[in-house]
Length: 250
Image 1: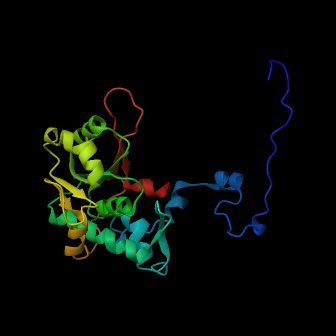
Image 2: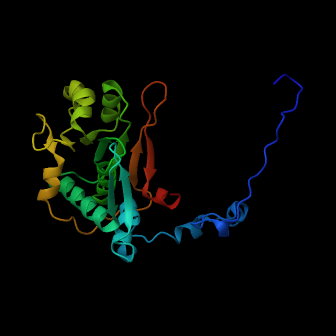
Image 3: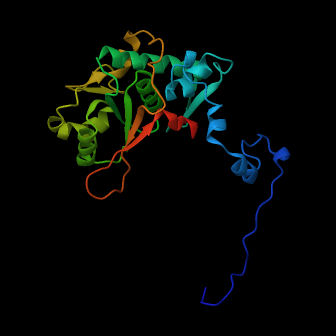
């Protein structure tokens, strides 16, 4: 289009009747929701830990649904590379999350120790995230396209003590720099099939051995929940802290 000419077509708002949609939308009137929004009202949708003892993202996302009327409903659905579908109900997810938290407790992790993941969008990613928060630890996701040096930098800066990853990602991105990560004590592999690499542990075997965790560790709104290292920054990676109260915006 040359300067000074008008486009041949104009953008128009597409109007849809919410009543005609097969699934009712959560946000029907944006302008009304924007005008009436209030953070304290938003927090009314949050359950909080039992007894009003604090706030924990894992409880809000998993446990409160698993123990209620939604327990048998589908929480996560994964379409795998071969087009097969893996589904997890809230009860299934809560069981795995609880077991992962028990694994961390068995490994001796203390409050706010960092648990990193180097995974794609697979079930273990969500189990690790919510299990970490249930145990009062801090979850740190890594992008699975990072090379060894970006992975090493983030693990070092974040003082990663545990890493959850696959055999292939470990061998390619972590093993070459493992000796330069003295704080990384435990590497949990999701796909060892009973034969973990030297210096690693079989996550599936650990999950099968432990019992359910029990009551979620008490955390408060401003306690650290997630340490996230965005990609694309210049210089040393910069970690962004998300607290448990961030669940209100979620």
